Length: 504
Image 1 (tube, one colour):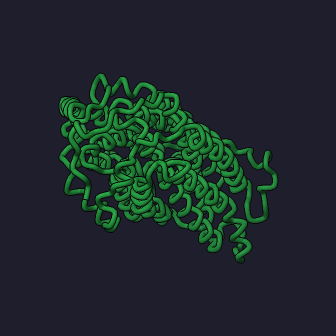
Image 2 (cartoon, rainbow, N blue to C red):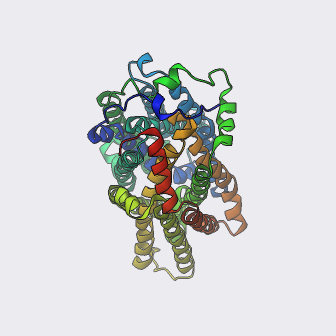
Image 3 (cartoon, rainbow, N blue to C red):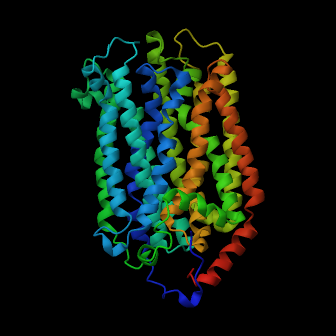
């Protein structure tokens, strides 16, 4: 079970703080991981429908992510907590970061070439046909991709927490750096997804089983591998883990003989109310985000551009909408990056709980705006060309852009809060990040299972899922504002600093 906190007298002398520039380099792998994640979010839901999976079941494909994250990230975090820094030439976290990046590279190759591999298995490549072989290959690659994402991001978050010595302010800065690189990866990834001419630069990607849209996706994933290799090298090679971090836990584990799952779920009994509040707000936040993540570009292609990936006559309109959605997500990432830069100042001025709560309410308002735009577009007469009115497109892109601010907060504040609040429980940072991940993946499982049938119940559009997202986001905002007030955060930080002697 988690160890009781030690007294200040038994604590070792504080080590020299890691320079912020090293924290910046340590977080750079987030750019490579998020580049592929941006491609996954913007292009794979439309692509899997092209392979023949109906819209109602497209969300089930995304079960791969939360189901793998349910065990992979806590398990990887647990294992990395058990490695003494001196026992590995790369330390405790970096071997898992490198292995996760290698899994991502193998996965994107599998997904990108799934149509070609499916043809080798006998798929009918006629437009509109269901390609069972390609779907099977795609699912294998998709699952491996999510395993790699979870195996990389969890140890990287724990790595940053190790380097900041759980100083709340430096932890927030490190997570803001992480969010900044995620924003950069998003910008590059969504810009890549929005460009429709990659097949001309990489003509070998066009094959009898892989048309222009498929070739663009394949080319984008090849670029992803290059960026992933560079950023992983920067993180792994340029930042040396101090030998003192985590050595006591790795060398003298009090629960070494216990089963991992028992340790994971048994640790819940030690959680204080602030920890539970962080987990509850995180769960409600991700119930809000996941419908948007699943269907953002699909919503633009279907509801705004009135296209369909299943109907060959409407495929072009659908892909025009998907590319416009990718443009909106790129602008979303620009706002995400700017918000990450000023986030620490906002938290110092208003408190992390208030900032998180307000951002969730802003999320809810944006999802309500998407419902209004859907209603207006459905009841509006489009010109004979079928191109949606400029006002509708601009309004949609503005909503996508504004959502970048709450997304930056979602990528930063929950992790910083979790890292600082579990310090006195004796949990390793890897396991702590895995526990927080449970509050993310369990809502994703619920949304993945329910969003498709829920949308079909109301006619097959994406609006019902966005209505649920708006409600969950608003509830999460209220809980954050009422349950994580500024005074409680400040006093908790002060008490923790008095016990541990952490330097500010």
